[in-house]
Image 1 (cartoon, one colour):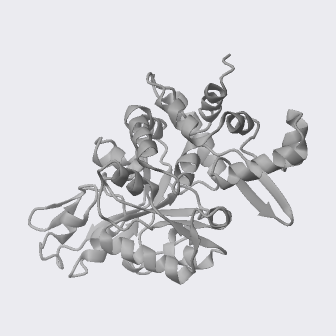
Image 2 (spheres, rainbow, N blue to C red):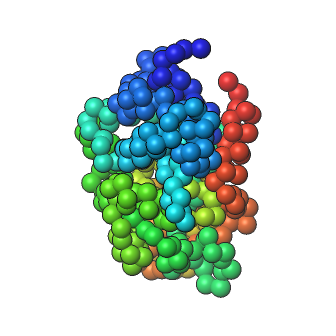
Image 3 (cartoon, rainbow, N blue to C red):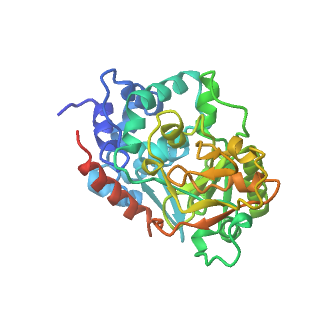
Length: 354
């Protein structure tokens, strides 16, 4: 076993459901060296996915508690681990590469780091994200275009869920920011990455995002919808984040739009678009709006439900209101907990050949 702290950290991160696979160029080691000092890399592998107080980690590792706590606080502010404060206690747990270290680099990413991230995605991480055939994100449309009288669970209601969040933050989209630094991407709105609850507190306290109200968050979602961005959050019933994704920059969307892979590898489509042929005037607006090419025009617009994300972008732009959304009868409901999703991803990867 290597004594190199970065190799050990790579091996540690590769144990997460979305791992951190090795490459022939070792670009992943270069990324870790940009993010972590050697001391920080040694400390990071002492943590677990389960939140613990510094005293517990110190006892297990044999390190001085006060010194360790200072270092853990410093690392949390740099986005190298996750920290939660509750009832007078501070707990720390390890952060995977995604969702985690990658997203937490939003305020420190520069051209050099952006180039490394792109190389790693192209050579290894895009395959890693789709390896399990378990989608990591669920797609949620705005409620206004869902068929009337549809019985929805709370986690199907995007705006209502936002209104109920106790804390909300917004920051820049790391995917679009990376693409722009690499001289690529689009001109879509960039301050669109929303976090809720404990995740929001982490972003706000560490200066990675700013606190906003529910009304401001809903306005961001509405503006993102107008811009043609897909509203997607972690594929669990608990609302922890909403990404407003474009097909050209988003790490998940690119697997579908640029690599031609099945949407289910990345996105859980809970809804599907239904077009009323009597109302459709064949204007083609929906064809242009669909981010994944699921809508085509014959005599009237037609939806390929196998491709359809159920994002509702076609419905919100239809001038004749000829499109509504309905829950898929064959849908897969989001996981009860992120932990359950992680187990499913690990099991799915075991079934994948090679």
